[in-house]
Length: 123
Image (cartoon, rainbow, N blue to C red; front, side, top):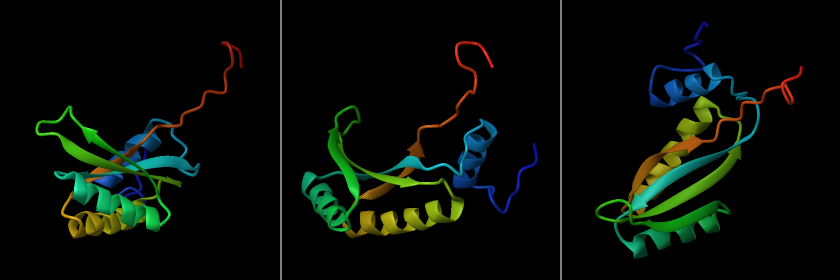
């Protein structure tokens, strides 16, 4: 399969989008993409969460005790068609928010939406 490097650049975001595309995911469809921020203090995480709520964003804040030391995780849920340029723009915006509230931007991910037209083994 030919890879269009304009649409799927050779970097972490382009590689992930390319893998989704190769796996049969329809990138023109809207996906719920999760962007993550991490904080070492609850107060910092809560201030960032309030900022994002004021921006009318859908978020989830929790203490991830599976990490040592535990971290406050702020997940932002954005419904969008996975698009390289928009993801890069959102990463820059969230990276600045993380910086402003003394946290770190920690990446993105989403569920793959691959549908099989076959129902019960018939076409």
